[in-house]
Amino acid sequence: MASQALVTPEPPLELQRDVQRKLGRCLLRLQQYEILLKALVAHGDIAGSPAGFQAVRDAQVASAHKKTLGTLVGMLTERHLTTSEEDDSTEEPQGDGGIWLRFHFQVGLDASQYQATTATLKELVDLRNELVHHFLQRFNIWERQGCIDADAYLDASFETIDGHYLTLRGWAQTMDEARALMASFVRTAAFEDLLVNGIAPDGSVDWLASGAVRCLREAESKFMANGWTKLNTATAWIRSEHPDQHPQRYGCGSWRQVIHESQQFEIRRMVNTEQGCGEVWYRSRQEEASMQGKRSS
Image 1 (spheres, rainbow, N blue to C red):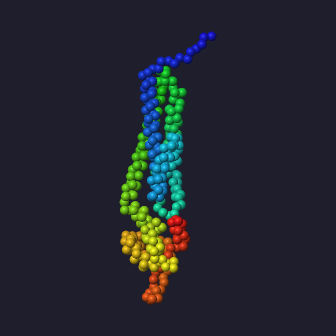
Image 2 (cartoon, one colour):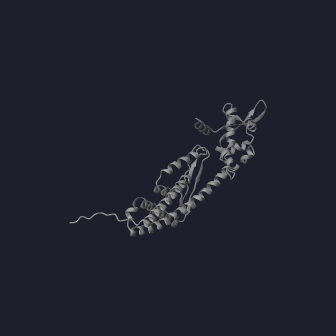
Image 3 (cartoon, rainbow, N blue to C red):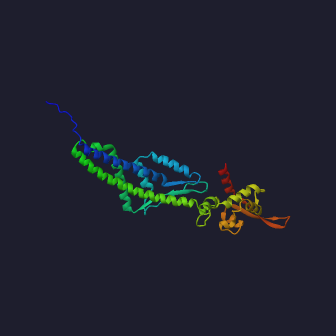
């Protein structure tokens, strides 16, 4: 019985080169997609204190760099694609009451769009795995017909990959525009008021983070006597050392109103027997003073 030799036929070089070029084009576009997706996932949801914001960003960039395409697509669909029926409310971290910033980018889709998008994203991951791991098992590019079939498959694959890339690029451009708006707000006086004085753009005040409360506490640490601080002494010192801090900045007519509105202090009237007049004294509420001590220790 004659033995049968396994002979590799002469490859159709011109067709084979077209297949190689088109395969390379698909893989390059996939890498572009993956790089862009890593950037969107890393920058699309960042939260933290102003001081720690950059460190959180750097950590997320490093983490995204190690993720596979399948994991990144999962993060994209879970964190950044949403439907109108979903409740996007998230519980903010319980910190010490200081300023907490969050940038969260989302793409709103209706239910049918969301279902279709998640399905096509899964198909994209499957396509990537097919091209990287199984392409030569599927197509024999050492034969003419194999090259013809592979060529048509790669044309269709590139159209699919490129469509996903263009969609993702549009989302990334929108996110960059939102980040630019946020960055421009950070440079405004309104943001400084929010960060330094606890005054939101709508005029509401985060009293625990406000400059007025900080000044009253600082004066308290300097002028306290028997656990209480004379308000006139404190406000005279604030006018001298922090002239930008005044009740009107917080929508109040007096420092007594600041103390009342902030709910951070106790207040009482005492009679000055030597001068025969009443005086207003204040002190930090005991639970607040205890929290302040824990935060500073």
